[in-house]
Length: 132
Image (cartoon, rainbow, N blue to C red; front, side, top):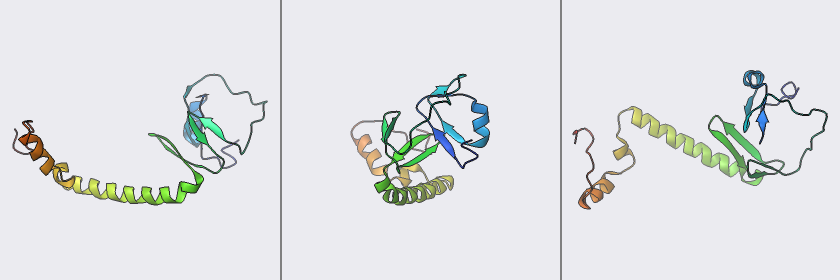
C-alpha cells in the first residue's frame, strides 16, 4: 500500500520480511530479514522524533540512502550539505577521470614529497614503474 501511495523506500531499525516483493518495487534498508510479518492492526505514529539505529531523526530531516548505507541530514543543514555533496562528487568524478587516463595517484594527490620524506627517514617505498 505504501508503494501505491508514492513511497520510494523504507528504512527501519528492525527485521524485514517478504524482501523479494520490496526489491522489485522500492528500496529498503533493514537490520535483518524475518519470516514474521508486522502487526498491522496497530496504528503507528506520525511527525515526531524517532531514534533509528542510534540516530535521532526529526520530522523534516532528509534521509539519503543507497546500497552502502544511510545518512540523516538535519533539515536546517540540507541545502549546505547538498552543495558540499555536489562539489565533492564533481571533484571525485574529475579524479576518477584522471586516474582512468593514467595519472598516478602519487601525482594526483601530490604525494611524491611525502614519499621522499619517508625514504629519508629510512623507510623502503617502491617507486611505481621501476619494479622496486
